Image (cartoon, rainbow, N blue to C red; front, side, top):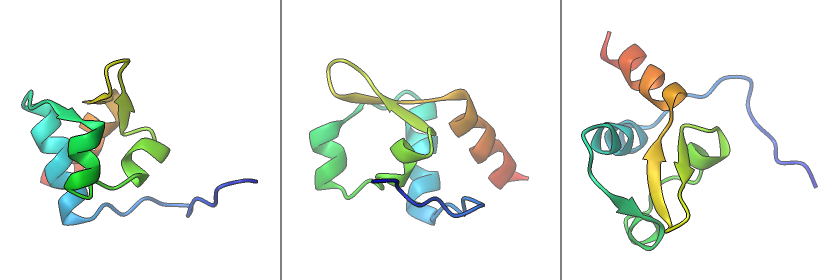
Length: 71
């Protein structure tokens, strides 16, 4: 089964906020992300990655996305 991706990613305000928190060094673990309803789209599109301990980390393209949103 193939997951559909729209041709362009339009982040929500919550998704941008999550990326900014990760860039500032806040640790967000998968259970925390589920509790706070962090969008799975961030993982699907490669803006964050999940570490071996379940923590989420921002990727280079995630940083690029929030820089683009700040302009």
